[in-house]
Length: 414
Image 1 (tube, rainbow, N blue to C red):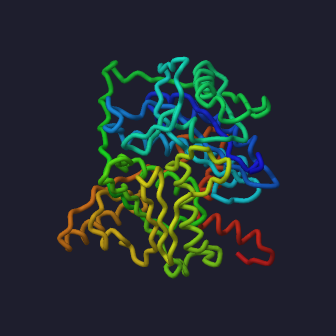
Image 2 (cartoon, helix red, strand yellow):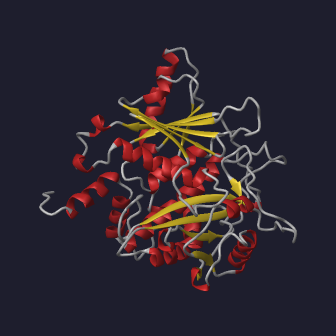
C-alpha cells in the first residue's frame, strides 16, 4: 500500500477535567487544526486516526471492566465536533471516500493511565477485555503502519508520544519526516465549586445485543459518533469460551425505496455502498490486525446477501449485522432478543415508539441511550462568524453533501 494511502495518527494526551466542549476545544483544537491542515491534499483523500489517552475502564479484572457510557460518548462527541468545525473552516470534506481535499477522521478512546510505567522486558501484544475499548499496548500492536504520526508539543504530549513509540517499536520503520510535532492548547482542570468532589459517574454495564438505525448516506462525523457510541455498549465474550456466542451489533440501514423523495435523491448512495461504509468504519474501531494493515484495511470476515451484510471482528466475538429497513421500526420489532437501542436527538421519539410496539407484542422494552449532538456553539471562537457556523452545519449534513455533489456536476440546476 503506498504510504500516502495509509492513515495518519494524532496522539492527544489526557483530556481536561471536566471534559466540557469549551475545555476540549481549548486543549485540542490547535493540534487537530495542524494535523488536518497537513493532511489536506488537492489530489486525493487522506485518513486520520485521532487517539485520546484516558483511563476510561474501571475494574480490577480483565473480564469485568466497566465504563461510564455517558462520559465516554460525550468525549467522542466533543472531539468530532472540533474536527467538523475545523474542517469547515479549512474547506475539508469529512465523509468516507470524500475525494480530493477530504480527511476521513476516526476518533478512538484508548484506556491508558499516564502514570503507568512499563518494565524494560515488557512485550506488548494484543489483549482484549469484555468491552470494545483497548489499552495502549494493544493499540500499538494492532494499529500500524502509519503515514504520519502527529504528537503534541508539550510535557504530557511528549510523554504519551514516547510511551507509544516504545510500545510500537519494531512494528514500522519510521523516517524523521513522518514524526511531526504540533502545537497543543491549554489543558485546564477546573476544580468543582466549593471544592466538593464531583459525583462518580454511573458505570454502564455492557449488553450482548445493541441496535440502532439510520440512513448513513455519505458517512460523516455525526454517523461516526452514533456508531462509536453504540459499540461502547457491547459486552464482548471470551473467544476461548466453549459456549461462546458473539455479542451482536444490529444496524438498520434505510432502504433505497424510502429515500426516493429525499432532496437530491439521485445522489443518494446505494444501500450496498452505505452498508459497506458502515462496516468499513466499524472495522477501524473493532478489528485488531495482528500484522497491522500492511496488506489491507478491509474487514476480513464478511458475508453479503441482498439487504443483509454480516461482518465478524476480534476472532468472531463481535458480529456486526447490517439489515435493510423499509419502515421506522426495522429489526427492533422483528427480533425479540435485543437489549439496548441507541438514538440521536433527531430519533428520540422513535425510541418510545419502538418500546410501545414491543410492549404490544409482549416483549421486554429496550433501554434507550441517546448520544450527544455535534453542536458548534461551544467551540466557536469569537472571530468565527455566521458563515462558518453555516459551513459547519453543511459539513455534517448528508443532504448538504449531496447538494455539493450536485453543484459539482456540470449543468445541474439547484
